[in-house]
Image 1 (spheres, rainbow, N blue to C red):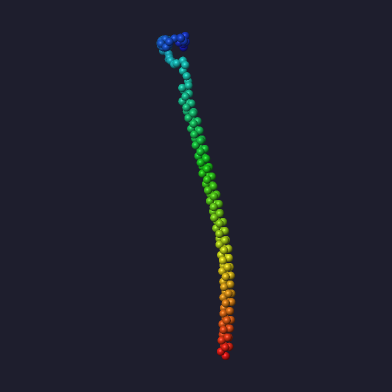
Image 2: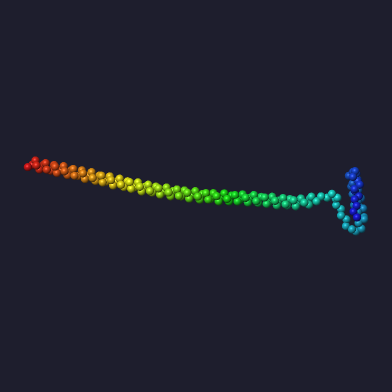
Length: 155
């Protein structure tokens, strides 16, 4: 048994509208006969009920987006750290190989140099021994000649 008492008063002022609202409320209460009376605005919007739900959904999307972004950054950081460790290991191995090769090359060169030096010392020693022997022989010959010349002049 709802009826609209305000529908015909479109051109009324505010005070007329307030009076008509009061009359409608009083009439409805008188006619209710111990029934429940619901009084609510005719143009109530349900948009306010949706606002908290929309805020909650938007917050969930924002949190999901933030988590995904931070997860990607963490994965990138782990990837870069792993790649850096791999490169460092590779460069260390290359440096160790280079040092080992250089050490082997240096050992070979030192060995070759030592052999050459040893051969030169041996040759120099042999040459000195030959010259000393020759000098000794010449000295012995001169001594023989001096000894023979002195004995022939005394006789």
